[in-house]
Amino acid sequence: MRIAILGGSFDPPHNGHVKIAENVLKKLAFDVVWLMPCFAHAFGKQLSPPQNRLSMARLLETSTVKISDFEIQKAGISISVETLEELAKQYPTDRFSWIIGSDQIKDFPKWDYWQEIISLYGLIIVKRDEKENLEDKTKKALGMQTLDGITFLACEDIPNISSTEIREKVKRGESIDALVPKNIEEYIKKHGLYK
Image 1 (cartoon, rainbow, N blue to C red):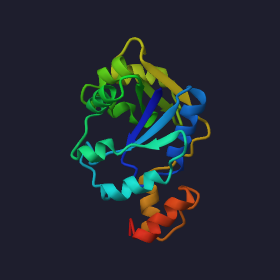
Image 2: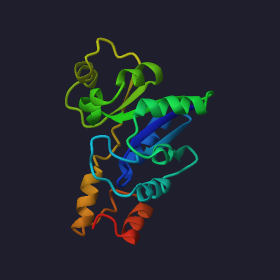
Image 3: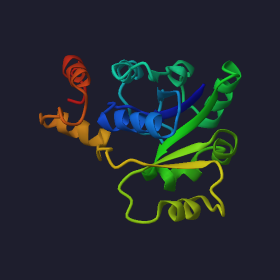
Image 4: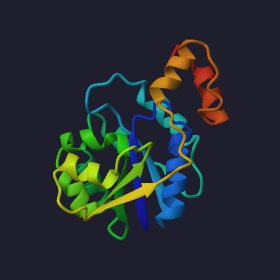
């Protein structure tokens, strides 16, 4: 099976995550997308409790979008390439790739062993609102001559949503119903998150 992993804080999960998963499945012939909430943010950002973020992510599950609690179970800060290595051992007949948004390219070289993610597993870069040529931008940011191991995915229908924006709207008492699925909006209200 071909599995693409979208890691992140999912604080909260939103319609952008849903659209990324749909596009990867439809356009890149993956069998399943795993959404994988992290336990802690690699660059020290404060996050909501892991169980809340995992529970919200689980509300996005479908037959082809699955939620993995792998990094939450490990606790602490996860290193993506180690996650991929361990999953490859646990599921030797499956092939894994990692998804990032094009907004993460400039920070990607700060990831531990980022080159191995590309060379051993494959990196999917989802195009956001790119004004410049994404391939050139990627070569420059990563200092690469060729882009072997990298797949670019153009997605015109991905809404430009950030979890930060959603949290701020909740704090101000504004509607988020256009930004998150209804069941996640209800979960946020029920558990009093982001107040």
